[in-house]
Length: 261
Image (cartoon, rainbow, N blue to C red):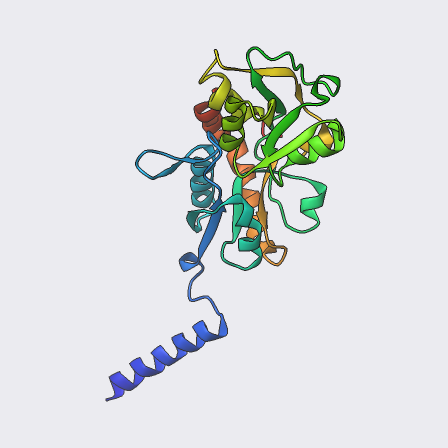
């Protein structure tokens, strides 16, 4: 009876810790990482239904680096911020750009990658990426992205902006002639479209490195109440830059070592 009484007491203490929110072990805590798997080569779903890409390799290595358990989920972009705020996920990944606006609302460990924007156009197009060449044209891009912000603030009202849930959807409309150009991230545009179909697409004009939109690089997004998690993620990112793992992943997925900072 004494043994069973002790076991019951231990179980009651354990249950009390769980109810009180006290972690039984930090090693047992699992963090859910959300990303929209519609942005190859950052992240996509292969023919076997598995999520692959730079962001998958990066997040798996990052979680191992700081010794936490992570579960990666495919979360559509239009609902990913609400999922973070509701506590359904703990981290947003997938290649989000660090902006002052976003930093007001979230903690953003990083940067871990930096790349420019670029216009994708048909090979026969005369668009050169300038504001003048885009007058009267329709440009497609992903809604809620840095690309949309750039289009509205820098290109102006004489160009129509058409928004999509994914870059693939925007490029499909480019193929159909419903848009004249697509504004994408160059790291996505080159391997995903230009190099894949060099007789169909080309980049128009110069790469866009405007620091107001691309200058802070890519970062993760964490709730401001999770400062400890954000700090650990930052330490892991710094370690992966120093040990060359990030450069290794960028060579694998982008064909070159892309600067992190």
